[in-house]
Image (cartoon, rainbow, N blue to C red; front, side, top):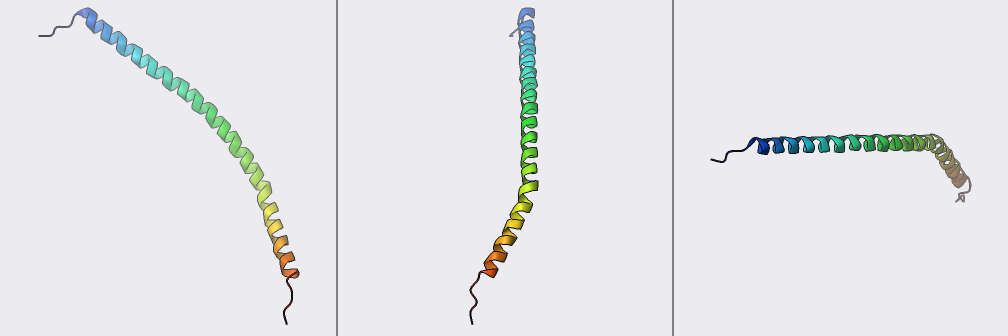
Amino acid sequence: MNERSLQDILEWVVLGLLIAVAVLVVLWVGGWLFTFLGAILKGLAGVVWALLRVLVPVLIVAAVVYFVLRFVQKPKTA
C-alpha cells in the first residue's frame, strides 16, 4: 500500500493553503481592477449622457430647419 507520511500530508495541506491564498489575492486584485474600471465607465457614461441631452434637441431643431428650408426652396411646378 502507498502510505503517506505526516510530512507528505502537511506538505499537501500547505500547498493547498498557498493555492487558496493565491486565488484569493487574484480575486481581490481583480475586484479592485473591476471597481476602478466600473468607475471609469460610469464617468464615461455620464459624459455621453450629458452630451446626448444637449445634442439630441439641437439635432432635432437642425433637422426641422433643414426640411423647412428645403420645402421653401423647392421649385414650384405648374
